[in-house]
Image 1 (cartoon, rainbow, N blue to C red):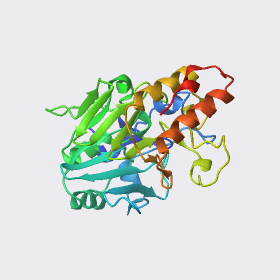
Image 2 (cartoon, rainbow, N blue to C red):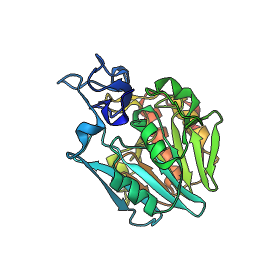
Image 3 (tube, rainbow, N blue to C red):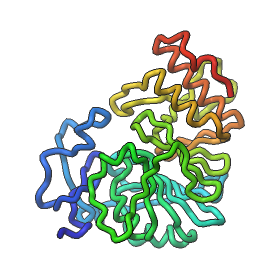
Length: 294
């Protein structure tokens, strides 16, 4: 059996496979999916062993919420997303994952208190999740609907993965996973206090980052089936996403990448307004979501 250091990793999406790096696959099934892409240079592979010495993880405490940390890899690797560490009195939760994991990162996360769970929004961020779970001896929560996208077997005596089958799952007190669908059938957001971690379930757009005195019709989010290929979701899918989050309250969203943080008292209204703008400009001026209110 090949050790995890030498398992195959896609250079474009960061997904690890149960395949030796010395025997690369013809293609990556994640990147072959129309939501993703293969770069013009073609399929490329690496491994954790090959990444050592060339990459490092960095972390930064949120400027306003001291119980929240962004963790990312430099130089950028694969998609380039961040993980978000949430500190709670009942233990800590890691939202989404990055591919690269090393002893310094493990030490940092342990220094912030006991990690109790990892929650992954969707398959593009499954990355090296088996290794993260083993490093911290914690379960991985992700949606049952997306389980066909796993690319590593869970051979643990006690299953690492906990598949979310209900619309809402309490991870810890005041930490709630909400299944919205959309980008993937099981796409999740995570609510902690008044902070909503949205990954790219809601795509934070540039006009949402400065919202003071902006004219009517200015959007803050887009809702996409494919982000890199810019394929939008349909009005029924967007409406279903709204119905999933409507019972909850939040005053900030935190997206997939550093800097994608929107803080405003009417943040929930901004999500609904953005949904209405997208549906309207998709040509559905009479769709039912246009009658929704917060």
